[in-house]
Image (tube, rainbow, N blue to C red; front, side):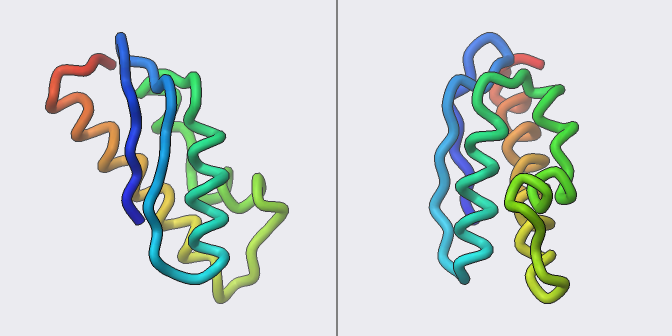
Length: 88
């Protein structure tokens, strides 16, 4: 899962993804981009794997790792954005 975002003034204006994997991983990536749009970097960090799973209407126990991948992608995205001086 690769997560991309356009960040301006510490706020995520738009997000996109590139995911190779099962349908649940692709769905988690997609819903994550919707959850991120318009949020500040700090607000993005409040999105947990459970937030992603709930937004999908739930995930089966054997697919919960897909929402964990989404949470980890947020952490990396925010870390990189801050490292580039994009705010937050």
